[in-house]
Length: 599
Image (cartoon, rainbow, N blue to C red; front, side, top):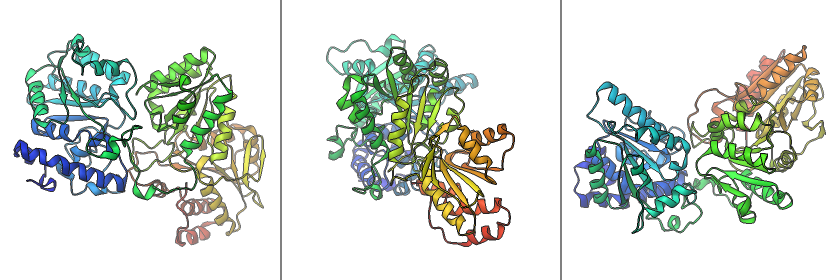
């Protein structure tokens, strides 16, 4: 029998007998489990696509035939079969394999797709390009899950794909009945009905597409037969494959929450300690809703990941899962607010990008009291460039009338959520990072809603800490104090609009510096610098944030260090900005690093 490590590319796979191919499946699943339980990653989805991926690479000739994945987190098996088995233990590690398709890794990774529901648009555009250039010797294959098919963009693309019978696109529908949790909505009901003996006419046929299936997604020979037939039709076709998320790993199969959709790295499994930001939010929202019958929670197919499970258990009638449809979630929230409710839209920060127009024109323009809670804000690390929530503060700062809070710990998260729900004349937002909330950081004093975390003996530097960068800023202040620099550290908590009292305090100092885990362009630092400039007598401002480019994957600490957001880097940079500080900056640069920053 062949060994998985002997498969250097799809051509090796195509040389095997069906029996030999079947023997690879348990080897693949064993490597998936052994690796993901150490590095973390999307285990459940990949356990479910083992046979499907084997069949795809047996029938189609990648990279000539273009196999596109939606979402890309189901591409681990694809990576193994395209020559990356030896590197697979480096998954999601700095310098190792990405958790999503990566064009830097392989010519077989066509698009770096990690946000759902986009692949059909890619496929439509690629098929159009082939037609315009007279290319007829290669297939366009789009693999997407039934969860991704709940996104509106997928149907916008299908509207165009189905209308062009002369442009062949093979849509492989990986139907496991789930995204994270069971797929929501009428589409899921329709797909389930197609499995039964009295199946209705498939919706795809009504649109004018061919339809093959349902096919057992764990029967390699049946899959190969269906895929070859689809390739021979020469027209748009849906191949409906039925798979089981978590297949072949009993703990995943028995996990009703999300079938081990994403597992944490072994090093991250630390019992006890500080609660996660997500759990603090979820518990507080459920408690507040007990006394606020107008509070309703919305999510886009991420009930448990965004912390809404307890809310759903206690207030099921006020819990709305719209599927992978952030745009719809935001405008539906505006409608709920119009009807007298106070909606809370819980999303990952990176996914708010997809609904910016709805936030701007449907929520903010109508001054709707909608609260946005953005999880995984700032540097998320191992999920890579598409998932770092480094754009949200910049985007939210563009929105007229929106108030924005960035809590530094669990206590200020609870406080910010209560304050947000008390706003009735416009939208609010609050954001927090991935991971644990750490220890609460008390304020020395508070004025005009601004928390003073440390008072400097002299007004040399006002250090404005944004959210979870508070511990790092306090470390910086301590280091600077050893060089005779007086540092006052403040946490505005509500960073938009910029408080006039913060501007007045800044004008009393020789230098102002801001530290945030958001891109520097348009972030909190930019807004404070603008407010000081508008005041007419602004001191110099140094803004520290995430470098404005797509960041490679690695741990949060590694990404922050690479971006210069550690206590050592910040101290050196600030010393160089202060008069007579250059010698001290050189001393600081030579000192060992005592902290990586962030929490």
